[in-house]
Length: 279
Image (cartoon, rainbow, N blue to C red; front, top):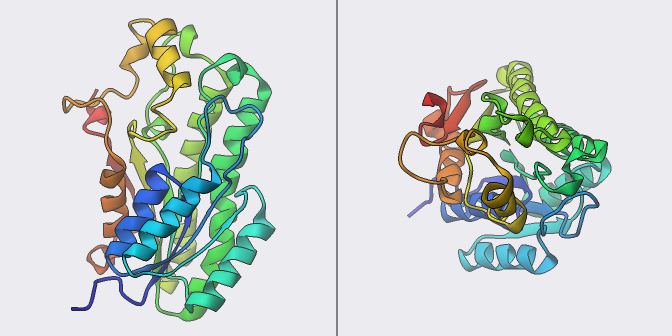
């Protein structure tokens, strides 16, 4: 039986763990081969543990266990030359690029260093410029193929709802994260307009909190257990009685955006938020 995405190739950033790994596995289950990257090292100013090389290797193992191929490297989304190199290498080895998921991110919201200007710069550089670098490195390949495709930028409910309710939650990292994620939504709309004539759809997904190492870590737990006040804990609270959504919920949405079922869906934002927008 032919799988729905068989013969297709997806380029995914931040693929070592969390949402990125979920995207890779979900698309591989549907038949796609994967081009993937992750930094897999510490970034100065980030106060939780980032992915390690072993995490990336585990993603590769899981993709290959599904019978799919994966081209992968460690690198930085802030480096456009690296992303372009990986796109070309992936296309040379796998034959094409059909889908792009700009997923790589950091979350310097809380902790002693979150009020440094570095936190603002990191958020903008990784989340917004990194997404732009990813699209710029890949979309010409999809255009050249002439078959259309799908580009997905992972944003956040922070793009559409305030992340700060009191001075307790105020930080350079928090402002930078929200601003970058809002910028990603605008970025996607512009690329959607640019690429519509090539039948390349561009959309954003805006999740509420997702149960990943970026959110489920000591930095976030310390803030909510020891620092946050009653108003601060109301940020991005789902209407459906859950704490967070899971990576597979975002990956399922991304799969739909890559499938032919969404062939005329472009320039839009999907909120996978458990109804947080209602609150």
